[in-house]
Image (cartoon, rainbow over all chains, first blue to last red; front, side, top):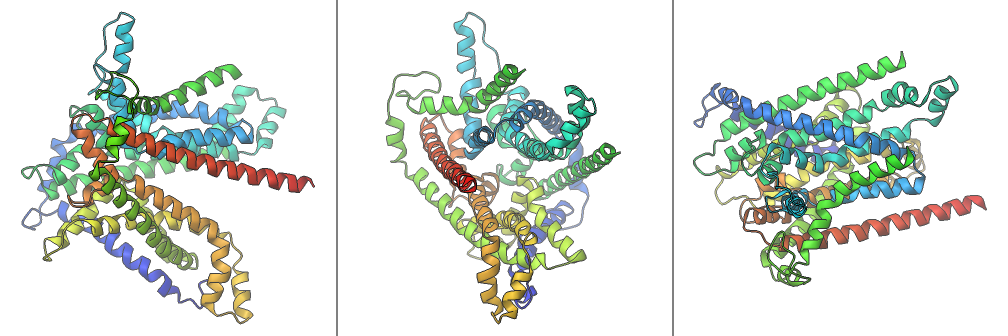
Length: 276
Length: 268
């Protein structure tokens, strides 16, 4: 179709732009990760990974927990949405997306009001005569923030996949004697795996790399890998070290790349199994 | 079963909307307290409109969003046409590179660009982080989304009509503007809207690439959350939320109105 338009010419601005602002920066991250502040080659930045192995583990742990909670919360909602009338579906989609249009900083900030020691939940609890809970600045609060912020990213892809399933497939299963549970387990669930997979990646990636949610709801007590990286780039003059920051970012990038490859393999395997 | 799922849905939505309701409620608080409600007042709205820092960052956010979305839409649409006519490894390479900013966590995209900017700034005199680094960063993370929304329209389009226009003597550029663009317009508009909203909403990439001179609205909001509590944030969020809600309702009503008209026309 690009015939006569100069195929190279119309892609040229894009090619140049992506080269300079995507490829070169990633190359620089790798360069910084393997050099010291003087520019000499070194592996010492990578040895920091050992120091931060606990941080990596906590980040992964919280991200996995919130991804699982999102999945458990989202699936039933997406399922019941997919069975509603067209008008209701449209309204529900709007309701799911509306909070996403509000900046996530503001939404996270609002949770502070609710969870604080003197916040709304504790006031309500005390009003009925119980002792308050300590909720803010805990791992639980950070997990809640992750679930809250990323739940729509799980609902939407699962919903989309479920609405695309041909109704006659379900009817065929029913005609062949499958009860509701079996229809779900053997038809709907396997067919919705692609949506589940994209939901998982869309929740896991921002959750594992966040530094804002942990700052606002963890109050500095929950230190995630995102916080560490932020500290190496924008911390106090004493703590800034692009080389170590780049090395940790590189590890984070590889971690996500690997987990996504694994997830995609799982996806292919599952659908293939479903066909057999 | 039906009522059970209804209750469940209500609970999930209560969870999704609880903080938003709380925030709107406390934006009308006459006291400067996060939890004590002293009575109804519009005090924080009045203060909001006198806060030059917030207003300035709002203008900057809008300017960056418009400029980056327009630039990304132009570069992205042209590139999508080019990539669409590519084959084999070349096409695959382009699509893989295109996906890097989409797949990478925001913080990695952010620091990789920051490293590049700092690398250049420390070597060239007179440059610093600010408007231009912000704009470049926003264009960079917007372009892939434009491509992703234009590509499906291109591959779904019949390429013969472009060839037909050429055969009938139309010069390539005119044929592109008159034939191809209208066919893929929907994808271009979707890409533009996505780029605009992503840019307006972005915090992480702006935070690392704005410097102290040019702060977008989310960056300003973030620095406000670190300072002593101010209900101005609530007032600001309430206004933003209401405008988005009204916009969405209008779009939805227009859409369902158009659908009804179409349905009626079909009946006749």
